[in-house]
Image (cartoon, rainbow, N blue to C red):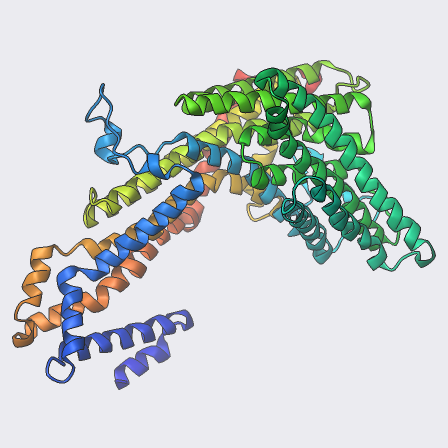
Length: 605
């Protein structure tokens, strides 16, 4: 290895050394192959073939195509996504000219809506286990787990959330392997395992069998109670819609089974875990248990139920369901049961819309209806006194605002961002956007992503301000939150807010990481053929060919994507966090105008 290169390695940053070593050996391999026609003719011909056929570009296009197909399979719109988009009214419209196809499919909106409901849950739980107080708005959702009971260490928070999700998702995987009565028999395994947490705690050994039995019985009681209420109303609605007993059963069974299982396992698991941590002395705050149960329902709907319709319906009633566990008011169970009927009816409408090619209209009406119902619920709940049975009070109203209304407005912007990214990458794959044009559109996507970022900030501020006004109460002090973020931007309690705002940038980051590979398509085919012809007799051509083969992969797969990603990082962090500062100023200005446009009554402040 040359001495100059060794000296350079000695001065380089540690993270650069593996890349430089890889570049050195890759360059040496290409150099030896280009100058070994007589000694190694097969290596020479293979290298010339790479140059003639643009194997690097083809490798990029093949990898890009494989990734795009996998994403389309996950979304469920591969056939529709790969079709050329031309309408009779606008045969050469904007979408056709830009992408050649329509990346804004109803199936992709379904997935974006599902993720929009999952974002707040995941970000909230992650920030809590990392040390946040567990607050949303002015409500201490999870901090009450430790108030006047027992202080949870960091590892105990991770253990609580991790084991809960493990038992819920692992238990669902286990019971779904069976059918019929075997599935019900299989329920005993996760119920016994989660009850065993008490035994493993090593507390109250003389009563451990009795406690274990009580926990197992408690899990079954919760499961049967919720399953029966949910199933009966859903089955009745299904029979009225389909006029078939079997079809009604098929439509509601799994939807009723999964959340009932999630509630029972989560409730028993959390109670058992706290019994172990505290030695049987800690009392779990009702609101904290309710939130964890509701979040478990949300995760179950996100990963195991095919239709997002059930997911949103669950959010509307999840907190009420969880509250019913600690305060078993029969009227709350009636609300939970009614959700089963609503889910079946909307599911039937969704299937009819898909069959008739109207799925896009379904999702539009669906989002508008639930958005309006969310605000109507806030308004009605604001009219009841705390003593009223319908009032899940201030906490439930914030739950509706943060985990129903905000995701409903976040999802369309995520959908647009995802559609633009998929459309531009597919245009590169099909040859519609060559190398330089692909990089130009990647930069345009960055500008568009920043527009989306400011737009989603405006939407979230507006929706929250409207929620305060409609409910007649200051559910969320927008100005106070913005001031806290400005004073302590790195505080872990604010991370879930950043996660919701930056979710629209995720497709753009992926676009940046992939679009850089289009640099391998820069060199036109005539130029590559000119380099390959007579290369063995022309050292200048051999040198140019070596430069192309050695540095084009580095340029396309490392340098350009890295530069694009760094440009976004530079906008966020440099110049005194220019982007974040302007975003906060923008939000402050909007919050002031929203307060004037949507005032809160003096009695609700």
